[in-house]
Length: 122
Image (cartoon, rainbow, N blue to C red):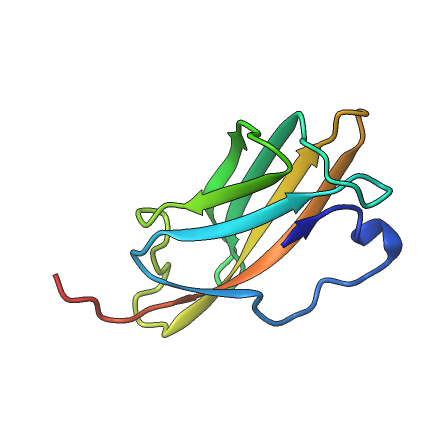
């Protein structure tokens, strides 16, 4: 996923899932950070949060990440990927990622994650 100024260009976030993940399994987002010219840039700060849109429940509060370069992997821990209602087969979640760029501007993007509830043997 590219984190840039897509929303400033008027491009909508689409209503279908960008990613799928299973309950109780770590999930990863690969992010590439770009400046307004489209060049790779290392942000000075990154935060993300995860919310269950199906049930309006926060799953992971706003969490800071130490930037390591223009490409960053964000891990959603298995302990946070749980179904709000155990009877549902899946739920739609939103991962909101923000970055502060070196020039002081900020960029944000939203990724839609479908969390799939399946029986996992112990």
